[in-house]
Image 1: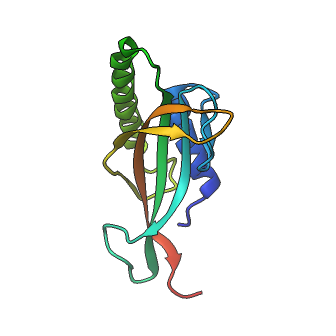
Image 2: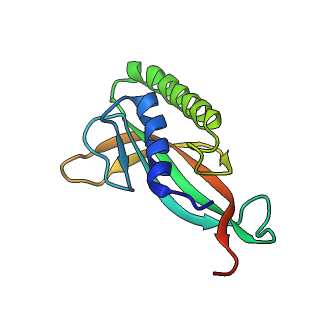
Length: 151
């Protein structure tokens, strides 16, 4: 099986849209637009799959996809508690959604969700200065029949 990346990205975007709402998801490591929350996802390269490297007829592959969500951080301390609760809710909701569709609409043999991380990031856009709270996680998408060994 070869991964159909159009179907794969549709599945990833669908889970992000279901969790955050329509109009809050973008593909690629683009700059963060004003407001939020915003989610972005992008291809981050290949690595060895956890199951090994090859079968008798095919090369197994694993692709890394980054998923990041950004919330504008308000200056009022009274809003911080609710923001942290929302970040934890989204982290759990995304994990539940991706685990429930661990083949991403049939485009992967398996899916591993790596540890999530949070941070505060500063937007470097002149038109959008500000501090954002960020949630990042990596999806490891495995295809055990990814590529033929010989043509």
